[in-house]
Length: 330
Length: 118
Image (cartoon, rainbow over all chains, first blue to last red; front, side, top):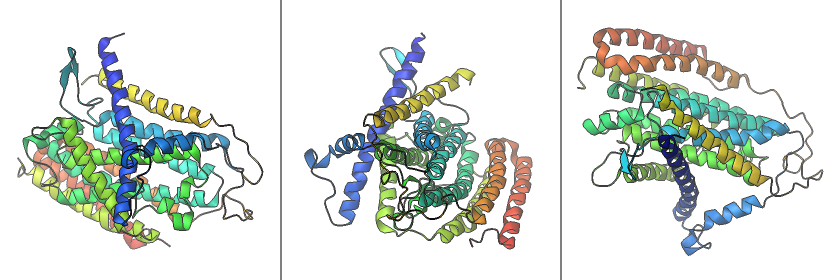
């Protein structure tokens, strides 16, 4: 066995472990913040000021009974959450979290792998993750779930277009689809949020919609669809959808930080600290939105996606193209 | 850039499968004891009276079709975007012609009312 291969495996295991831990504490952080926004404490009983709450939740979820409802497609019902988790975890591979460094004589890259098509790879995996939600909703054999799945499909594909267009401006400026190259290009000039403010705005709005977060959480609107695609799910299968949703949130925040906020680059502190700080800021913004804004109506959501974000993203693309091609941005 | 750069991707795929598989096998620890009312689909406690997989609005299909059109255009835009700075004016003209078809298509479906949610 090649030693370099071993280094990559150990690094992958560590990074996945860190992200899953980050998931648990993002969830706790969200509950605590939402509590503060609503003038209450949030969870504070398990462990010191509630910091063992994720552990307690996991233990509870493990001991929940696991059954398949009548009328469900048994195979798809059980596979669907696994598809979501698989796509979310695999997407970690291309997020760069630091410069390379040396440890015990081995050179370690600060990224799972630096492929030339990092941005496209992330979009492909997020598209794969949708299958989990849609199949799960369809296979449940429940009317609410089916409606939730149909809404999920329409919403996610609508905002996917706007998000893809908003990223093209960054790609034009960095001349690369590799996330590591994009970070370095920003370290040489400045954070792309300065050149692409409109692109960043569209990206953030689309990111909230892509991760099914409030105020765009129509697929799981609890007051009209009970819980949408995961109405029939319980115990650890529900936990899998939850894990996938939060990891997707972390990944998309990391993507936003990498594309527009300089990624892991920054003075004094090591790269992963900078990335974690930027991700934390974006996650806080996600939670803030949830605490502040009411849910949109579904037709307005589609209208926003197709009639506002898509034309704006196209405009941003055309202006960036003219500036970049005529050499004003050198 | 060589093919071995893509090997770590397979390792992360394996990681994703391992996490999903581990949670799935944990979920089998507790034995399922179903009974007729427990496995009933949730419908606010009422017995389901109509078939579950009903027809739903045509708008969902329409949106999916529009998505395919625009997403393919998008996929073609990425390679142009990467080389745009080197291509200069020629690249810009090609890109603008291409984007114009996208804008035209958007204007057409907008006018036709395909973006209205009924």
